[in-house]
Length: 342
Image (cartoon, rainbow, N blue to C red):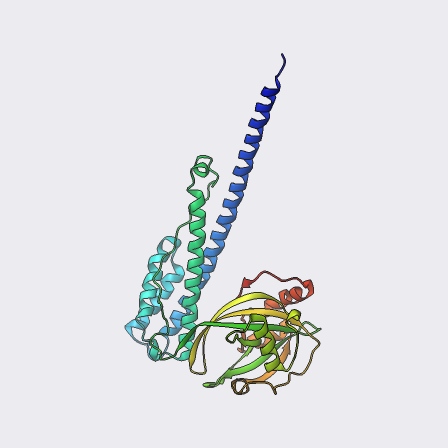
């Protein structure tokens, strides 16, 4: 029996269609798997942000202006319930905690605690939106007819949105102005031994509370991120470089903190730079920098851990664990992908 050329062509076309359909199904299943992983990770991030808010809520409850009242006891109880609640109950309990926090007169709280509360709520806001975006993308693909018919989602449960009330302006009643658009360029400045240069300083309004931080500051109007990093490096250390020497940005950090009578919400972007060790020159610092910066130190990861053990605050908080990554960014010479840190 002779098979005609037309029959062979039809068989080839059918085979190509089947192969293409299998490829699409395989690609879709892989994409679904990645979306489910992304949704799981976004929930872990949201869970961590909610847990941190519960800790801050308990601290708020211990303030002298709030303590020993029904409001204090309710905040403590709700924070505990939020930490113990399972996924099905979490949304309801967190909404109760949001409502209780919204009734706290934050004008009576210390500015540092207001900033902690604002930062915790901002992180919940960002994490919740990221999680819900992940859920939306996953559900959009899972609900397609071919995906349902072929069971490409496997046995993974459908992800669910997480909806809680948000306080739009956590600092609304504090009397502190909020700069919601501030962007900062920061430099993780390493020497040949892998140590990072940290500056020590304080809020001019609260001189008794000191902390450590990397070189950097706000981007000025009309200034690029790299230009701001170069300028801040020159002002704070006296070091002059070309912006091409910078690697990054590599990290992104959202921070809310009081400083010089203002409550600042800042997006910080970090560059990496390696230079031979030197003694910073302070002559180029602005008047505010001269008031706020009181010292400096070249630190290893072990030095950072020692500062933490002594109860001294270092920003960013994960810097001890991040130093090796910064060194890798410098060594690679290529521009890294930006990732979020705290």
